[in-house]
Amino acid sequence: MEDKQIYIIGDVHGCYKTLLALIEQFPNKRNSKIVFVGDLIDRGANSCEVVEFIINNNYDCVMGNHEELFLEYAPNKDEFGENFNMENSSYYFERCGGKATLDSYKNKEIYFKHYDFIKNLPLYLEYKDYKTSDNRYLVVSHSAIANVWDKRDSKDKFDIENFENQLLYRRYKQFDNKDIFNVYGHTPRSEAKLTSFDANVDLGCVYKKEKVINPRLCALEFPSMKVYVQENLE
Image 1 (tube, rainbow, N blue to C red):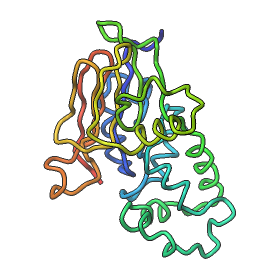
Image 2: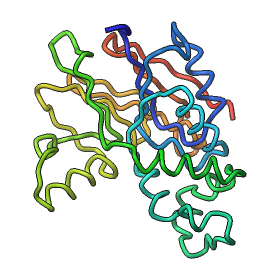
Image 3: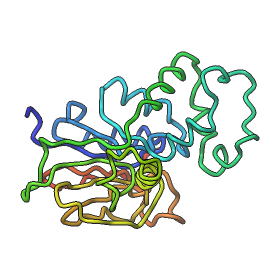
């Protein structure tokens, strides 16, 4: 294995300058092995730049709930630039920050490329070469996997839906899946939360201080468990 450490970055939400500054803290900077927990987009002003940066550097990423909302409510490739009416999906565009994402795209070809990239993001990624001292291997997802890990290969319709909803939307659930160490984001915290079996690395970078006490972008170096933070620079 070429890289002894992997860096898992929390919810970026279009905070491009902050992301670049965080990565500059890593020993190998942009040449590091990096994976994102999803929610690259929405709320912040530079979603297009964030996604383009990740594609160009061939970094890994999982699907977040904001990527799923984007695919459901944002214009598809036939609708982009055709006087698309955001009022039909005001929940996503206003409350979830989708308007900021759409406003960041000025080029149809780039939008199409990013749409396809987002559409193909996986729900989780396994890194069996990266293990804790007690032999748990890394699994990255958007929200905590909790107690649905054993349903990941199920063909049952209810199991599939339950698994997707847990990994994309649900909060405040934790469960010790004995063989894995799960790193995720989704629910903003004032500090990174690390247990013996999981870690939440979302420090609410995009939010104002009324919602999060100290908004920052966070990364976990794994398996060293060193935490990197960067204050919002947007």
